Image (cartoon, rainbow, N blue to C red; front, top):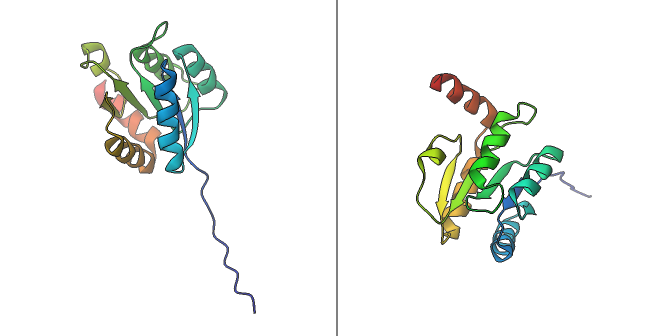
Length: 144
């Protein structure tokens, strides 16, 4: 007799990693893919916005210091676009937090050099939170 069990497998969470340094992109992509995440990459803020508008990710891992459009400007753009769903953001930064970055609706800051155990823990924790958009709306209402 065959005792087949059907197991439903949830699709892998999709993370968009944005950094102008190719080495950082490759390293982050590799670490996240080994953990089972589907990873897309972009090497600039403008490229990230184009990908986000086509297919919003489940999480955005975003470098702050990039030429052209920096990470803070990317976050401001996506938060102002009401056509996009709420996207959790982790900013990766090699410098101290600025007053401008403190005002952003983001989930976390990760300092460079990256502690990959901490990064993976934060990514897993954020992606496991149910109903991110409802929480963000409630936070916005409390702030106003």
